[in-house]
Image (tube, rainbow, N blue to C red; front, top):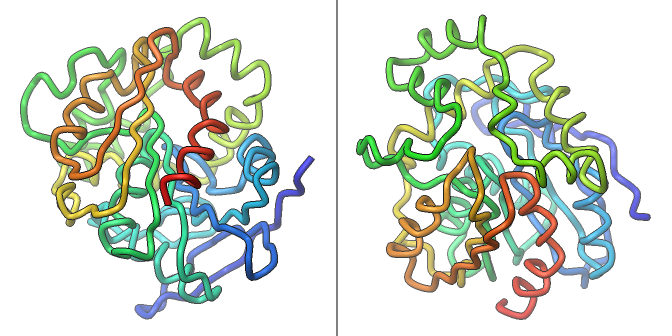
Length: 278
């Protein structure tokens, strides 16, 4: 099994501390820049490390502002957080990479590709959320959109919402729970750790999702694979379809029986696609 590296710290040009993780590898190893979901710590959890290791890939992952080890940055956009990732990528000497994000990491994977240009050889989102279009339909099919709706009223409203919010178990399908009780068990533990130091990271993520991203999907030049569970109750399938229409080189894989977590079982084949597409 692949070893998971310890956290390291990076100082941004504006003086903020950003935590990142790097599994290492020789100079010829293909690089996967992983973007965590909401909430997570940014650690390279075992299922991600294992699938990457099978393919000889080095993994870099950066904790977004407000998550453990990364200073808060109120008002950050999706592109702002992606710019932190690009700064870390530059600092460790990586030139070209595959960028992949799950759930709330999806927008950040796409934004990084937009910022990095041809340095991003391919992009994958798994259950990624689409840009907010101010339509009520954007929330349709979400079992519990309370946090996102609260974010529409600003940061203080979203932080107040967090004081009493509880996870809605109906957000996950039976297959999601089976996945969390199996190979992706580390995901649940990491989500708890990602929220343990307070709600700032999750709140600022939600604010960024319902605000302009700071990049346009049409500016993503790399090939993009959107992997979406047809039974997803957290980020419903129409989000992937909406993004597909705006991506110049987009491709959509619908996995009809999968939910928000169980769709992650497609990571291995998605990595194979990403390596061949790049």
